[in-house]
Image (cartoon, rainbow, N blue to C red; front, side, top):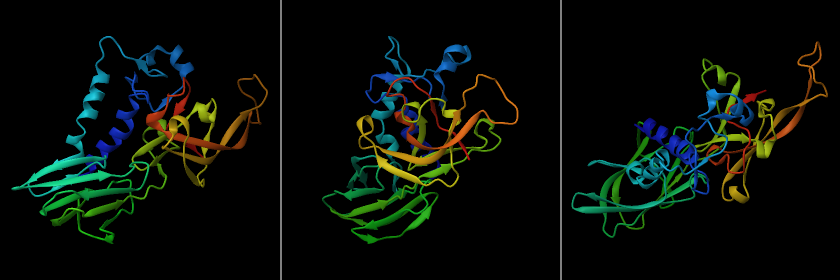
Length: 296
C-alpha cells in the first residue's frame, strides 16, 4: 500500500534528515515544528527542545540510530516479492535482485527530490521478465511515465504503477513527478494549526527561518492568492531549491503600551517571505523557525 511508503518518505526526507546538521557533527534529539529561542530559555517545560543541534554526547543514543537508518536505506527503497519488485523510494542506487534463475539489475538516478524526473535504467546483461511497481507519491497530482522515450501506461493499484514485460539492458523508464508548491492545511481540531498553512514541494516540507525573514515570525502571514517562486539557493543551500512568496508583515508602531483602544498598534506591510527546506534549518546559528504560517 503506497500510503505507508508516503509516510516513510515524508519521515526520511524531513525528520530523519533534520535530526542531523549539514556538517554531520551536530544532532537534534527533538524536531519541533516551531522554535522561539527566548521562550525556550525561560520555560523549563521545553528544556528538551533546543534551538541549535547538540554536539556528540559521550553516550549517544539517537545519532547512531540515524546512522543505522541511513546505512539500511536499501531495505526501504525496495520491497522484493516473487511476483514484483516494488520501488518505494527514488534514491539513487544500483541493485541486483534474483528473479527465478536470472538476476534483474537496475540503476536509479536523477536529482530527486530537487528535480522532477527520475530515471530507472535496466542494466541486466540478459533479458528478464518481471513486474516493476513504481510508487506514485500522494503529493503528486499528475505523474507520467515513459519507456525509452515513449509514454507508457499500466495497472495502478494502491498507489503503485505495475509494469510487466521482458526487461532488456538499456531499457530506460523515466518517471516525471511534477513538483508545484502545494499548500498543506491541518485538521481544524488541532488548535495550533487553525488558520495556518504549511508549504510542501515534492516530499519536502518548508519553513520560515529568522536568518531570511527577521525576528518575530509570528507576525508574518502568507497571502491566500500568493504565487510561488522556486529558485536554487546559494552557500549551504547550493543545489537546493528554495521558495519565495508574497506575504504580509506587521511593523510595530512606536509605543510601549500593552494595548490600546480603537487603533491597531501595528502597520501591515507587504513582505517577501523566503522558505527553506525544514531539514536544513538551524545551520546558520540560533534563531526562530516555524512551519505553520498564518494565512491572510
